[in-house]
Image 1: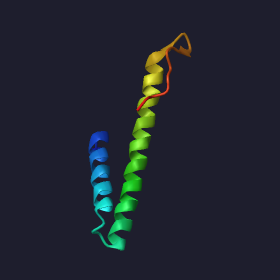
Image 2: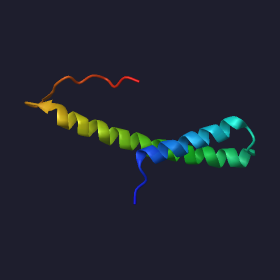
Image 3: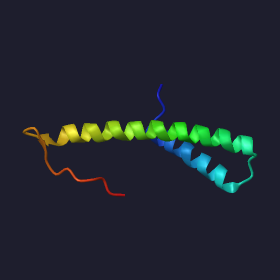
Image 4: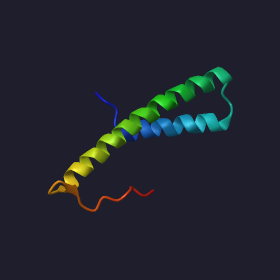
Length: 72
């Protein structure tokens, strides 16, 4: 079963907090960073897929109506 985007994001946030607290060894920090990069890539792929689905849903007569960049 695939992990949801939200669970990946939570895991990424935990990794960031653990890196920010500065109590890990260098080796632990590098492993956590590597895991975080991998999770970040998975999240970005999921966001890209969601954006493509949204564009498909918004298409009308071959053109995307109301396509605006996503705001934070």
